[in-house]
Amino acid sequence: MTYKGYRGIVSYDAMETLRNTNEWMGASARAIASYPIFALMPTPLFKMLSAWGRVTERSFARMVIKPDWEIPPIAGKEGQDHIVYVEPELERPFGNLVRFRVARRDPMERRVLLVAPMSGHYATLLRSTVTSLLPDCDVWVTDWTNARDIPVSAGKFDIEDYTRYLVDFMTHLGPDLHIVAVCQPAPLALAATALLAEENPAAQPRTLTLIGGPIDPDAAATEVTDFGNRVTMGELEQFVIQQVGFKYKGAGRMVYPGLAQLASFIAMNADTHRQAFMDKIFAEASGQGTEGDRHNKFYDEYLAVMDMTAEFYLSTVDRIFKKLEIAQNRFSVGGKPVDIGRITNVAVMTVEGANDDISAPGQCVAALDLCTGLPDQKKAQHLEPGAGHYGIFAGKSWRLNIRPLVLDFIDEHSRDPARAQRKRRRADKARNDTGGAPPAALSKADGVADQPDADRAAASPEPSGNASMPV
Figure 1 (spheres, rainbow, N blue to C red):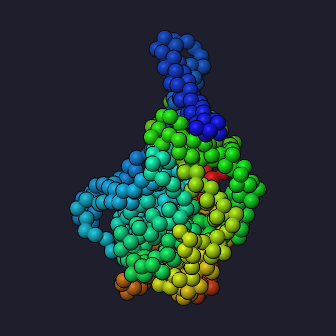
Figure 2 (tube, rainbow, N blue to C red; figure 1 turned 60 degrees about the vertical axis):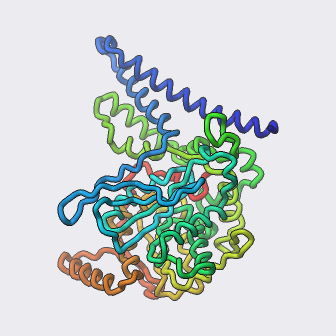
Figure 3 (cartoon, rainbow, N blue to C red; figure 1 turned 180 degrees about the vertical axis):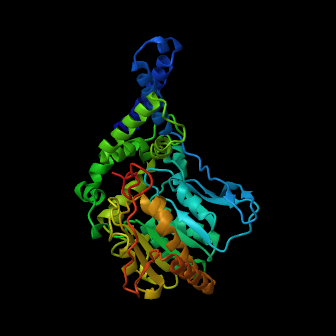
């Protein structure tokens, strides 16, 4: 083992030791300050110390725990609840294709594959997205594995391997499929679709919806793109890449550690996070904190981070952000060029948030110009006013405006277009009856922009850490 490799393991284990120490300190403070005799002392000090201990212990414990999906039952038309079972359908070393099976329900016409980001958080970040789609769709998701748990013997995993995984998942699910790619995987989902168009046209999905993804990072500057242009690949490899420590199955694997990513995520909005934790401690001390409050729901997910393989992280920065291989249609897989212009039958829709500080407006919609072989009637775009990065796939904007647009887009390009037309007529009648006018997607052929009300994300603070290129 080289000195550099040994130093990497020491650094990785040092971060884990620091996390363990903080968790232990929180548990100790909670236990000591909760001792009954201290209740007789007329001071709020011990209540504050106990509250700090509970919040600290929980926060540092969550960092190494994969969250559960916890999908609630789906209400059926017959008045019965249908339990949702989370089942791996295809199992691979670096990620599984997971199905959300709704018990005692017939197959749905809409079949949706959610492509989850591999950018520091688990696929459970899309829990609310899955929950909102399940009543109307059969849903699958790409559930990526924490790199620290993958033995070195499993080999490498970079963006080309990621793209091949998507191709395999799409082929397995068949052509009557609708892809929804959120954030980081948007350019790779576009490449996978183009690869299918050339290698196996019969397996292509019917629609591809790209939400807040960096198709062309240079189209609009953000802190993420500025960072990518500011640092060299050598600096990244030297300062952020480490070897998994001895505690995990992936010992010796080179990774971008989840704990290092989390530190960067929090630093991007340090004041907001600091205030959120202070408010939570005071709420706990005053007896107003609850197990399922807004803070716990958000941070139980936000603090749960996963390691990425070094080759995936570095190839993402180098090829997607620095060399702009997708943006300039120069991407290749296994030495084989991937021509996005080969997409001719898959309807493509892009969704962006006007206030997205991770993948700014302009980055994702660039996909439509790359699809040179696709007619305008198969292209659509939507810009959600007032929405940030999280809001366009899991917040209020998603629930009220974007989700209906995505479902309408799916129906319009499904096997039964007449069904979509009937649904649109019913929606138009409902709008006329109520005097309302929900937004509609902007078609490339229409040239008429939508004007929905501005909505912010439901979660607070917004998890800017779900970055396309973690910094």
